Image (cartoon, rainbow, N blue to C red; front, top):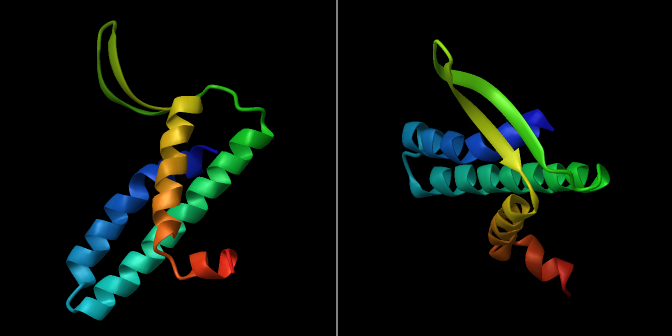
Length: 107
């Protein structure tokens, strides 16, 4: 679940970097966007499925410590609760809203 949580956060950044580096024409940009958004949708669906299977617990993952000095620590945390899951569901709906799969699902 930790890897899925991080991938849901980093996949948009990876997509932007890939488009910046390799998006020389419109067709490459479209292909990169298509695959990154669908990978993002799959990661969100898997994350929410695993989270639901575990009983919807409030989940916190400390990725790394950004700064530490004496008694002070600044960790980078990922926290998933019902409000955060709602945002992921909204993202998931946006990923598949304009997808070619949508007309076939409701036909």
